[in-house]
Amino acid sequence: MSLCGLVNVLKPPQMTSHDVVMRVRRFLREKRIGHLGTLDPDAAGVLPVAVGQATRIVEFFAEQPKSYRGQLCLGVTTTSQDSTGQPLVVQQVPMLSREQLHNALQAFTGPIEQMPPMVSAVSVQGKRLYEYARQGIEVERAKRPVTIYEITVVDFDEAAPETIVLDVICSSGTYVRTLFHDIGQYLGCGAHMGWLIRTQSGPFAIEEALSLECLQEAGASIQLLSMYDSLAHLEAVEVPLTRLSALQQGLSQYLPQSDWVEGQWVRFHRDQQLLALGQVSYQEKRWIGQPRKVFHEGQNMPR
Image (cartoon, helix red, strand yellow):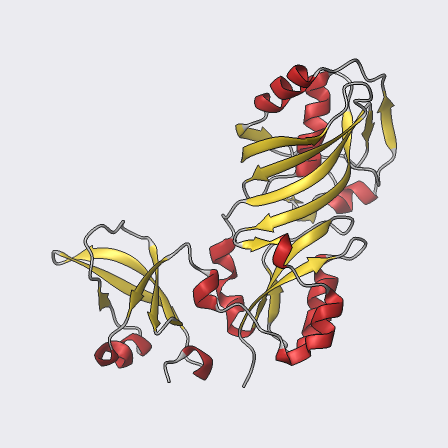
């Protein structure tokens, strides 16, 4: 029986997200594997990986918040907005009080717009920005809306304000390196990102993340997080035995409650085994759930 579920991988630095997927594929001997959101090669931390049929639910994690701990380095801007780039401008770091730092961070809390960095994978005219950057070309690109939910100061010394450690909770698609660069511009001395650790991605926290060494040792006997549990942010509806056959054929299911929202996604399950994902609609004076993704393999069926 093939594996199915999700695993919270602790990505080491100096390794791409694709490299991690290739390693996990080899350890678990499963071809169908994909990650839930790219983490830069130099960054470390949480990289959730979907295995088997769970690759079909990756899209349901795309909008979940992510958390990071990173080092803000004041006084130097770089070509990549992080420590791997070449210095562009070096400026003296002014005396900075905790109140001034707080006010600067508040200015970047909430909905903001970011200019994607040239080292990102955003496509412009059919070409990735990092491909232009490798040729020394800078192209125009549109700003993108993101949301910074919270920025917390972890380590800051007013007597030596050049390096500051921050915790950031943000929406998917946020470039933390760009956030740090922009904070430096706001403070008038420039800045870049030193190091970065992703501490949480959706329901996956760094405290429960497994190293590649642990995954290699466990191999195919690894205990994966079930699709049902990983999608706890979606409402759940248990399917009666009499309706299982209809569900497996993709037929609509009546919903037991009345406080639904048109178009919302729902988990159909039996004994907490995910059978299907569907969307809610109101038809003929009743709320129904239309299955959109049906899971047929044995590990998702009631015994």
